[in-house]
Image (cartoon, rainbow over all chains, first blue to last red):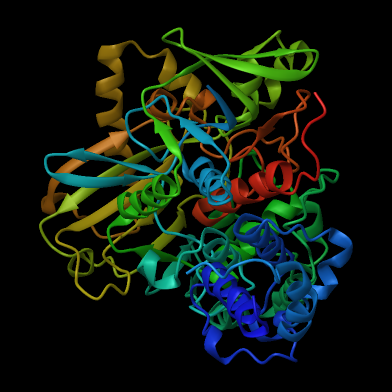
Length: 87
Length: 469
């Protein structure tokens, strides 16, 4: 997956877990909590979707890496580099 | 075949837990003893009318985009859009007592203003109480000591009429205890009714339940109707299998039961002797409800409120009545008086009164039918001393009692709000058996659904390692 594909993968997950959100305008360097009012239940969903879709395990100690889109991409790209973005 | 999780009961909590688990590829089965889904919030059909039971209105209304509200969390967790629920807000509701009346809408400011006008000496205390509730974490899953809401209110409000008026809707819509409430339950109900408010879905409970069942099935969840659980079998404190009434055996790694805490323990083998012997913790509070289909809109008969919580006596008593029902207080619901885009096809009024399960249960069959008619008439006659008479407009009527509730939901004593003792974290003496629904402690339509979601998250999805059984 390229950097853009990793970003798209995260956007897809966010669009699924928050159907009433406009995910097209997410700013990469503002925290997701701030932009989308994500709570701990939502972060659990992001982690579980990453496991379900890409078989990637995010340990609890790494949850803070998912704080913004930019940090998500930085953290996930090495883990996803050999995976395909599902259509 | 072995399931990851079996859920007992297809009410809102069971369906919500099922959706969450199926969403993350768990192999899930919901078993339901009845032939209709919904449990305590369900529907039935009589003479081509689809009639909701349980639901007067959905509490916890929040507008689209209010994400950190109970409704917002529910929608996100089940991945519904706010529009999917087709909710329409109430017009105006009211608490009506002999000499005072408090109106409220989904805008909390109106209630504050009403308290200020009707109880000018109490407004400061009321506002301090509100501030205390605003900073209270009522959704914590940690069990704390039972705290008397009456004792706490006494520190803020001195007029017993105002205290009764505040308790009346909160108790009628969710209190499993007689006379008093656990303070955290008071806060849950206060916020859900006064600070958030009422709405109804177009299509009623039938629509919401179908939406949930469709979502559950589309995620691969299985639902088996007419499947009554006879026993929950465990060994050394670990669940092993379920035996159904038809003799079938089902295996799973975990069970989430929404049938009620004591109801669940009663079916455990070997018996959970200590828990079952505490029969006193079974809920006692139940209701009789009558519904009246009308040949005109309730508004044209002088009923212009969405919901009215009324008391016609000097004091409001929320307890098991000494007669079959207590006619001195009750709830009136006019489903028509919600802001629907299209008017409903028929006028409808529902009347709910506290009822005694024991007295109804003791009646022989023949007397039971006569008693329903007699007490419905008495309730109406008392009601019409304060409200307009609508009897000439009734085209269809039906009533149900605590016995009906027991028959269709299996909840002991027809106790719609379950046991006064709540298992907030959902755990039981059996390590992989969990409780969700009324006895877990979140109430109302939104609460029940969040209960299923939280228990599925806490005990199954967030489990870091598989049970080391």
